[in-house]
Figure (cartoon, rainbow, N blue to C red):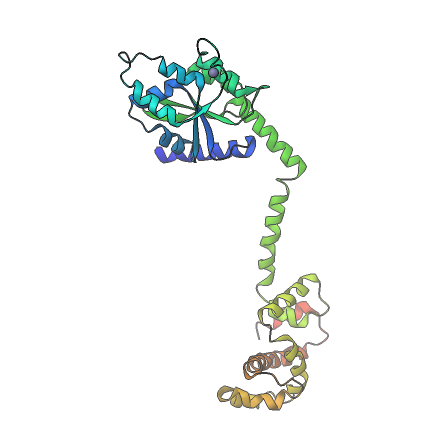
Length: 308
Ligand SMILES: [Zn+2]
């Protein structure tokens, strides 16, 4: 149950992040009532907010809210000092109502602080026990609302007006092609490795007159074996008449075969020529088979070679 809710909240916050530009640390306006309730249930308010919003939070409290806490009667409310101590650690949100004789009601104060031109301009999350405050803020797009219900911290699902605005934003993105390009790019990436597999070896050697796909394969081949390509193309012609002689020599002394066949090669190091020579032998054998089918269409070669 807890895991399920946490997953839902993560999704919800990522929607607020994407559609309304929320970023960590989330600024959370906390009202006096939720401070009192958290204290009543012995809850870790800040920890709860971080678990609920799934990220770093910056708790804030307005000047009016803290004045309401100071106005509590110590005898009626024994937790007063504890709550004030906690509230003092939060960032004070200046609402400039401190000049007033009496603090504004929290609803009026939060309305003035949060709503500018019908929007949550500063991207506040609001943690409040006031049902009327949450109802007011549900009419503003993009306000994550949090409250405590019997010692469980709850984040409200996205209000309809927020969900509508989010969907409108998504549709606009789709129209401008931001979303549209993503699947295309993914599909391209997928296609390449599929083409590269299978009978690519045959296609790479024979397919001089083939399409772009085979050219891509050839490029890949060259990258895989950087020593291969040039010596091989030189060797093929010279070593074709005597394919059997290098076999016994190559098994024990690969170096011995290099002077015989590699006359046209630059005097390279032993390692590079050995590797090239071994590959060259393989190619020679295949060259014979493919030589019979010279002039035949490429598809026929592809079909016949792997079987033989
Ligand atoms: Zn105020």
